[in-house]
Amino acid sequence: MKEKIVVGISGGVDSSVAALLLIEQGYDVECIFMKNWEDQDDEICTSADDYNDALQVCNVLGLPIHSVNFSKDYWNKVFSYFLSEYKAGRTPNPDVLCNREIKFKAFLNYAMKLGVKKIATGHYAKIEYKNSEYRLLKGKDRNKDQSYFLYMLSHDPLSKSEFPLGDLNKGDVRKIAKKAGLPTAEKKDSTGICFVGEQNFKKFLERYLPANPGDIISIDQKKVGTHSGLMYYTIGQRKGLGIGGGHSNLSSPWYVVGKDMIKNNLIVCQGKENPSLYSKRIIASNLHCISNLKLDTIKKLTAKIRYRQKDQLCNIEMLNNNSAVVTFQKPVFAAAPGQSIVFYNADVCLGGGIIEPYVN
Image (cartoon, rainbow, N blue to C red; front, side, top):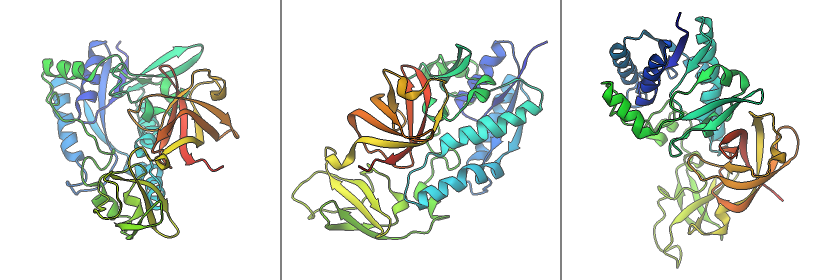
């Protein structure tokens, strides 16, 4: 009797090929489409189109599919946090929380009730069982590696999950989809956050956090423009500031370097090489470790402070069980409070935390 596995199918090419590969590996595959956002506005939410694409894929593959609504869990465990962080002027990463709370908790628990032992997704990452523990590894395709977004997972969900695309490059995935006649073979990758898609982020955020205009102030305390609301900007941002000429003798572009939440001022500097944009140290809060290894014992510890960033050599000094001071070998550009810092030892993802500013 074939082992049954449930695939979280999104209507994209990656989860489509994941399902196909599992069939070829001899699994009895069932697909579930996760509806995480309750919104009938097609400008914002594309779930209806995505479900239709997933349905077509399952028809081609001859697989059963049904949709499960996790929107209440999403609102309570992901979106409420997302809003509170933006309201505080920070830059959260909802995809990290969505993976922990929805895909590898709510969805996993639902699948387990169907009597399966494992779930699968189209993530570009790998799982390895070594030295009596499950480890999360980078995917083969370093440009698509998604271990950064999975750092909050623990041993239990890793032990019950499969990532069939871990040893494939994106180009190979599309070739497999095309050869199999899957309708998602040429579908464009989604680049938006998981519930908004690729629509106007500012427009979406305005629905829940009303605009609160204020001044844009340079690091030498000169007013150089006006902003529409601090929540719409992030550290290191260059585009969309609307700062005209005549404010400086320099021709270099302006960058967001900070936010004064009390005065409602957006702080900017000129030039990407400006020291104000770089951090030698940060605080990592809300630490989560996948591995049993202690982070401060790793000799060649590296970290990413954003997706697709090159690994940065660093060392770590634990402050307590939940936070640490991270010192980088070279200062890092635009460490945004609220974003994730994720730690690695070569290809092994060790865990991570939330970026906080370091204050001497």
